[in-house]
Image (cartoon, rainbow, N blue to C red; front, top):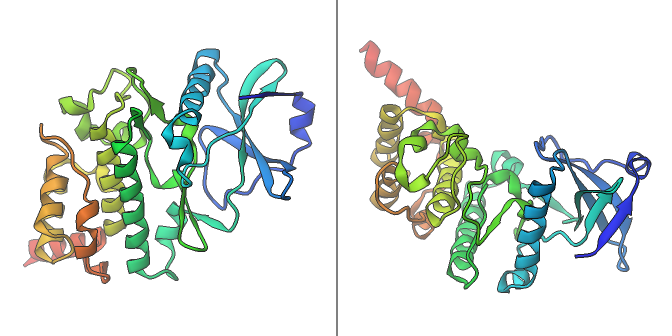
Length: 290
């Protein structure tokens, strides 16, 4: 990867890239320049420029670029290293035009649920494809904010500098940090800072949780054990998920290896509204008053 040297004054002159209500906890994105085809090249400027942290990201990207993963059209890989005032501070990345962040895509009332489920299935299929290639690669912090959906319903994965290649040390993973239930489960290997070691278990858990939160319309990973299991049973009882998906969701908190739910998404009905967590809570309230 080549290095591009800039000054802070150069960065201050750049226009910020609009994230459409998506809040980034790691960086600020700027428009940088146009390539030969007049497509925009962006700069991802990191908030934290600790040498060890940035070098880890650079090493990860170099390995990915020299592996089979570089041929996956869904993966949006940073291109050059940005050095600001002599400090490695981020990367250039190509803009993915005419796309919507998956978080906003799943919340849109103008998009049919079947289309949303098909997009989630594509992500699951990509995850399986990545898991089957030779390079030991994990997305790590796999969440809806790190995916884009194009006008053609093709998916793109961004923020790949936070992924893991042949890494034995823990990484920050949003769902595992927030889901305290995982902290006592050995397969997630959570350290004192509630970071977890990269693994297939983690990536499958994050993918499944992303789908579950979509079905529920809420952050189900934050529930306590009893409420979580009761809600999963509710989804099965009202016909939103098949028994295979129920078992996989329950196994998140067992010693069993995590499986992906991708093969069962076609069994999920388009009318998922009755499976929302708010409906479940309303029915629970009625039961208590009767």
